[in-house]
Length: 356
Ligand SMILES: C[S@@+](CC[C@H](N)C(=O)[O-])C[C@H]1O[C@@H](n2cnc3c(N)ncnc32)[C@H](O)[C@@H]1O
Image 1 (cartoon, rainbow, N blue to C red):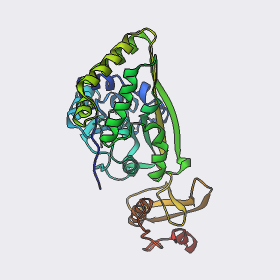
Image 2: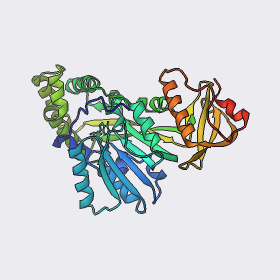
Image 3: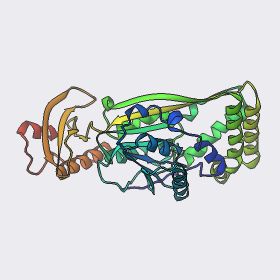
């Protein structure tokens, strides 16, 4: 499976971590919190400095949280944080969201905060997140949408910053306007529309402490983070332009009237829906009883239509083969299956579900 092809443009400079370490489950994952249960097993992929990961661990005292990130240095930092907070139900590992080294159906919740905007293939990432989520579990993602950032007062320097940020992010292989795309990526990853709850929420920086903090950290990020290095190395900006952007953030942070709103798209995707979609326009939905040797499935019409209502069991290897085939079909490859092979305990009409 292809691994990461994008560059993480922020890097982990102190000015970046000052921002990411401010994040909590309350201010960054409120849409997910009502769905947590005390014994849940959670994967927090792209966990960064681990402040959200640690909060999630506190909310599942009888469960377990695994934090994972592609950057080894930040994984070490997360370990230190959770040790300081005396959390014993959390561990960390280095991992790429495109190719996770976990078994199928491992986690109740797989969560990614501000990660999909930075990855080379967000659809593949969501497919992989779904693969390691148990039937009935949740794939959750939240990403900001840079083009929808809104601030006051107007500032030439901040407009230049946004323009530069979007160019650098896309040159690195990411998508800075990810928030508006999350739902469509989930559908491309094979979730039915009915299985995806797409919402939005915001961060607002307006009071004196908040505006000074945000202005100050972007004053520094604009000059010293990996974003600044890549802007110059990629020929997107010269040092004087970065300095002007940095000065604009400083001025914005110091002005009493300043206000900034950062919008985020959010998705909660139920992993119980759809295994794959056949060329005949039917989806195969995993409904219950997944085990090492078999799973129980239901098929339904495409686009969230009424389930046809017939449930059946099938040997797991056959269904995994169908899943792989359906994923290839979504990517434009010819269908591999005219009809499932193997000795299924199926009636003819169920078998016909898979006929092209
Ligand atoms: C913007 S930070 C978000 C960190 C954390 N989730 C938070 O909100 O505070 C994005 C993180 O995703 C990680 N990352 C980027 N690409 C990744 C990939 N392909 N697989 C796993 N992690 C990745 C980066 O190393 C970085 O720590």
